[in-house]
Length: 473
Image (cartoon, rainbow, N blue to C red):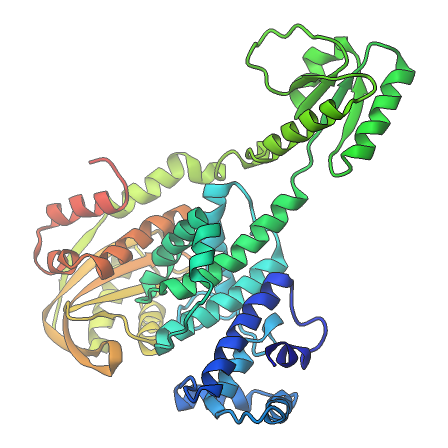
């Protein structure tokens, strides 16, 4: 039945097998709960928006298809199914700045930045994969915001297969989405890991191109025979070229693997890219060459041996250190939330942290209207925006002379008297955003941190912030 639902879509809807699989899993979850009389409940406004956006008649076709199995689904189930279809068929907008204020393709690239740091594979260059992951992140974000809990029956298997990747993705999502007061449960992380892990494996199977230099002093004819055999047996390598022994000092360092039909005296006894093989390429030679190629592909490539230069040197260090040493602790007068935001925006612009107090204030208010920014039971609210009107990454604490009632989780009203302000530029360095994420994670997970924001002295806060940003005091 679930596969039949996906067959109702155009043939090119799914970007790849991983996209198809994750969509299929969500369809299976939804239909199973519906058939057991436990339909997924969604807010009425969200359901109306999704169903009214259907211009293709898909919802009608889906109802008719399921009725053939004796299954009648609610509008909520219909909306849930529609938004989980592959290829964005259930709705686009991943490049739009929604509740986060940042396009989801940008957030997807931040997640993949963390993956690249650990595994040395740049998935951000694949625009179709980034687009697909963006749509999935958007759905995950809204499920978390709406309190929709789904059971990932494959969670244990995903953890077993992708244990290290699971930890990396879980950490990345905490760093990125805690700034929006949202944490993803393990079941959701499992789906993301399944999707990213499948793409990593696919990329690894393709492998990076391994360059090979063949040294064969037995004549041009013999070297050409060996060249043809190498290209025939190892079709996914390249370039493969023939050289002479006198070329070795100059050309050798430029190749991943050197195959020689004679012993070669090397200056470095630890040299690992040289193999001596038979001119006729025996079965044993083929096995050894294959093992060496797999080993080379398991290492980061030459272009993958570190983060971008701008993020690995003094510039990143200066930006991060500037957030800690430039920490603000200011007091603003009591008033409505709008008035408090106006005071904060004015202080930021007067202090040359940002430009255009009116627009900065509008962005903060817009972010607050999109969802809860109050940390429950803490009297602290997180104000986080990204804009090109921001001059530099910034962390500030603003305490009120009084308090203001704000909406917290579950629509409860909570008095707030302290605001933690995190500002970043639109195209901020991923490394800086990662450090900033440590601050928002602490706000949610460390019960002592909100209390310190409300009561501690500037020097104590600055020392704590340096710890969170990974700086030596």
